Amino acid sequence: MNILITGSSGFLGSHCVNYFRNKRHNVLGVDITESSTTDIVDDIRFFVQHSQQRFDLLLQFAADVKGREHIEKHYLNMIENIEIDRCVFKWASTYVDHIIYPSSCAVYPEELQQNANTPLIESMINFETGVIGVSDHLYGWSKLTAERMLWQIHKEIKLPIHVIRPFSGYGPGQSTDYPMTNLVNMIKNNPNKIQVWGNGTQTRDWIFIDDIVQTIEWCINDTIGYRTLNIGTGIATPFTELLQIIYRTVYNKECPEIETLLDKPSGVPHRVANIQLQSHLGLLPRVDLLSGIKTLL
Image (cartoon, rainbow, N blue to C red; front, side, top):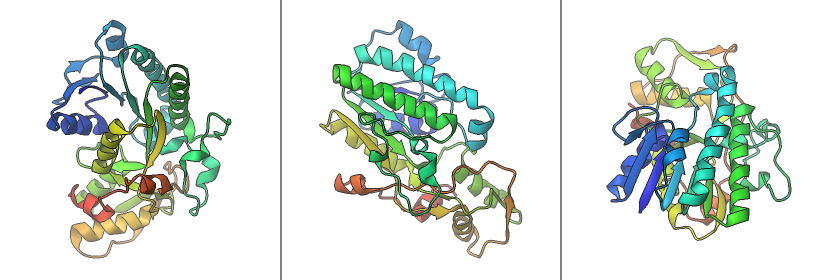
């Protein structure tokens, strides 16, 4: 299979390049940043302007993302992601046989992420009926816009499309711009000064990179023409509890008092996946939180 992976130097992109190369697929990685998983160093928008090469599969990971602080302070960069997606999707409509797109749990309505007892289910967003809500910040809106473009493309030309919504992904090789890696590094390097952004009660659903990649592989062989799919564990873990788990894993003792940084962005109060569809499809995650954390130590 000929696979194009954009954003191939990034966290998810690099893991997918290595995984599918190991599976003996022909993989072309394109990214603006040079790395061992990138074959062509270029802005993907320029690449698609000149490419007429056909691919069996596109994994469109090219985007400006980074962590929560970047999303909130550089919000106009998120709008540029819409233009990146538009250029790639327009080209892919002619030269690609199947698109798998990593959207985000940030597309779900903010109003549904205030209560710890509200797991987010795929049907909470339905373009056919006009149910969308207000997504989390401009990053969420940019991902929702990409989903809307893909829905329209499939509706018009029946191109097979899978939209995945990973929750809080983490794993080896992730930048410290992201919370899990940042917290692990903080605990390892400064064990006597443990801090959390916000009040620490905000919850997230932590999903290990291997489970994301294996779900992507499953999507390749799925016969449904258009599918949206959560990738989560269904377990909501508060940040303070996560810090305690990491600390005990590193030092085999209880975590000291956690300092709350109320002036730092903490995002929505609660975010956890409804995993009914994952369970029905046999796609429940295999890596538990403690095992995943140990890979980062």
